[in-house]
Image 1 (cartoon, rainbow, N blue to C red):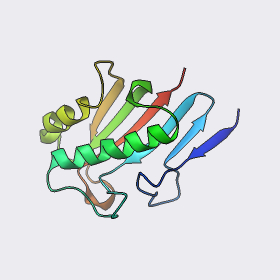
Image 2 (image 1 turned 45 degrees about the vertical axis):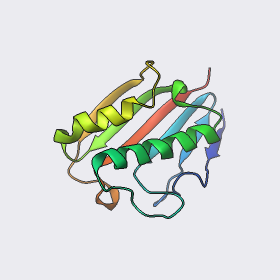
Image 3 (image 1 turned 90 degrees about the vertical axis):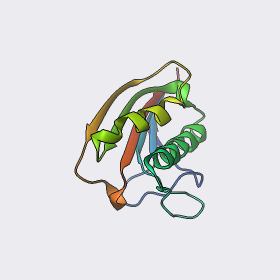
Length: 127
């Protein structure tokens, strides 16, 4: 089974030696996304809600590039730097799914790239 590298200018370019996503068979593995605005390269992080929405916009762009949407997502991992922000992040995140939520874990970490507050990765399946 081969793999296809998924990349789009509608999401931030990788800031290290990795790809935005890799498609193998019918499974899409999306690297963790942070709140970088792909048009400016700036962080969109005036508050945790804006930050989470930008992360989700970046994930959406990658899903679309692979011909998928949030309905195809089966697993997410959310990394946050402050578990006190869980409720706000969860509320923003939840708006992108239409009641068919994927499996998920949320983990508090001491720091994230560019010192952002939230990073989310996803696995999607196109059946």
